[in-house]
Image (cartoon, rainbow, N blue to C red; front, side):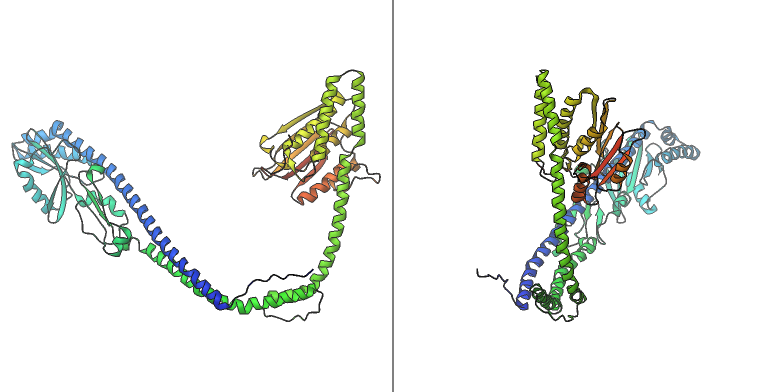
Amino acid sequence: MQNIKITNSSHSIDYYAKMLIILLIPILIINFILSFLSISTIHKQNINQLSSSVQIYADSLQKELNAVDHFMFWSALHEPSIDEIADSNTHNEFEIGLRKLRIRVTDFMYSTNVDWTFLVATADNQRFTNASAIHIDYSAYQQLQKFFSSSERQITTSGASNNWNKVSFYDEEYLYRSVNYEGKTIYAVVETEKILAPLKTIEIGDRGTITTSPPAAPTTGFSKLLFGNPILVFHKNATQLPFDVFVAIDYPSAFKNMILLQFLMLLLPILIGGLSLFMLFYIQTRVIRPVRRFTDRLIRISNEEPVLLIDEGISEIDNANDQITSMVREMQNLRINVYESELRQKRMELNYLRTQIQPHFYLNILSTIHSMIQTENYHEIEELTLSTSKYLRYLFQSNQDFVLLADELNHIEDYLTVQKLRYGDSLKTYLHLDKNLLSAAIPPLILQTFIENAVKHSYTVDEDLVIDIDISFSNQAKSHYAVTIKDNGYGFPPEVLKKLQQRRSLITPEGKHVGLTNAGERLDLLYGSRYQLSFKNQDGHGTWIQLVIPYKKNVEVPHNN
């Protein structure tokens, strides 16, 4: 038969360089698109955050405006000190009434977050004075005095809490509110800048502004094209404030770190491409060619041809050359070890078959059936034959490494049913099970080996045999689960217990006592060092066996119905 050699097509280094450049072009385009999308996404997130901040600010300010309105209306209607100011004929009476009013206003100011300036005017005696500390420029205060002195200003602006008016003096904008009752007028005045002060902490760039009037756009051109309209408007109908809020964002300044990062991300593929070309040439010269020569030597060694080993200048390859001879020797030893391992595997399989073929167990069943026929216990015969058939069916199907714990427990139940029909009520079993473990994996017939050992070596006619089985997770991480089996028999003989604890074989030359030894060997083969098998005698009497194995959830093994 002719040998067919399959080889991969080879190309020059220039071909791979061109392919790398072609791949870099779509990478750069995709990177640019992703950068644009990321900038747009972050922009939208910042807009949403800004909108949320403005809404929170609006809610807080609305509550304060309502409090100011309530205070002004209540004072105009019920505050006696204002009446004293309005009825005062002397300066002393005026000062007494004003002092009382200022104390009342000062108490109210403790509950506010904004520095309000409260003024009071009376029509009868032409009084106009401040009822609180003046938080505006004195020149603006004089202008306000002239502004409010006219009769058309001594009115109630509106009953609505958000109906505040604007007035400007010396390039400063002020909001004011007036409440008039029977010739007595109370004014509340505040600078717009102080109202907007809480919003100044928002990042809007060096040239960004937050005002109550439409500002000029801080950015144009490419920034506007990239980020959209740089001016955000929050109408008073939406915020329930007495004014509109205009936020002008200086995007290049506000997002300069992000833009710089995106620029670096655009440069990164170019740098990677250049480094890739350099590394491609370097690897071709310093790595690929020495590896090819090393591979050729390995092929010649596999053909048992003489090879001259030379240094390639790469420490890993040179060390590999030094170890080739010892590797060949280790391969020969490995072949011997594999052969011996196969022999041990065959021996374990034979022992495993021995645990399944138990003539005395089946003879006892037949003898029990014969006795039941003589006593015409047909119901028990039916139950015994059914349990025995299920027991045998499980034995014939248990040729895989793992089964579901639920199947293994069903098999144990069939086995114990057979034994209880033989021994009657003198055999009692108790199962404590975490139902989350029903889908766990377990080697087949492992638990039956331990249960059968308890029934076979612990049962006596003088005392009932009680077998207690507990299956639960062994740690909080639920990485392993434990199966604990206890009985009230005589316990292990000292020499047997010593061998079990030392993991020594119990198998006799005649092939007896195979079960426990074979169980340990099977667990070693399946789990290595990832399990624990413990034996001891309980205080008083009885054996104690515990098996801790890894927990595998939803393992895909056949489920025997």
